[in-house]
Image 1 (cartoon, rainbow, N blue to C red):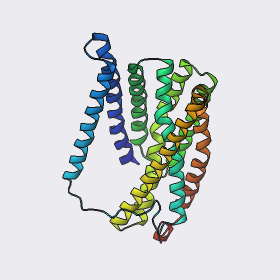
Image 2: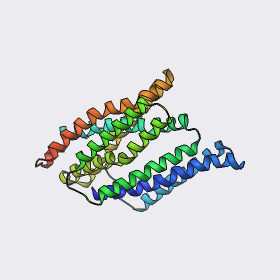
Image 3: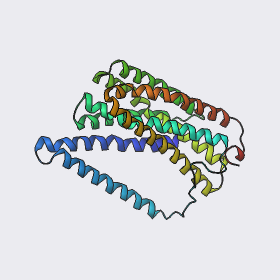
Image 4: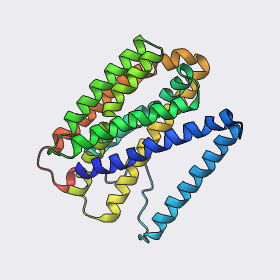
Length: 277
């Protein structure tokens, strides 16, 4: 958990700098008359692509041997426990898809320009980094579900506030609530998943197949939620944005039930057949 918390703090550190820099870069050209916001978007996209390619070259330089890629979304020898984790990750991906888009749209709707998006994202990322570093530097064994309960409670409070006060004050309150615990979900779920795999699957290629399987299911949930969001936005944009955080609260129910089932099962002695046969 400490390692995952440290990695999350490092990633969150990048998410503090990047949104602030990009948001203000987009609007700075309009202020000084040097370039248009459309040109700024193109430049920011090109820089992002170069960073993405650079990361790929770094990974290529590690010279890792090729791994076996699973031919289906579920490995053939996956156990019911792993299927529960995949189902949980599917709901996690659906929440992630909504959370990646709707808050940013509401910032533009209520607060206006792109610098508002970057500033608020950076502030909430700063809060998340400080909270997670404080929690992660004093790790306790098997505390994941307690942290997820805190995340769920704060997310529900923030979502209900925004649903009740659907204006900029409610949006700021939502970001403050979620900003305190935004990294708890990812860090806790990753901790459970890695503990499941590392403790009971010894073959390195098989472990990679399970990790890729988990990412495929997670992205499937994200893609489905984004597709449904786009469809419903054509019908009634404001109503869908207003109700979106209620959808997130409802998605928490199966997510937490499945995670609790996995958590209870993993608290008991397991053999490798619990994960794969």
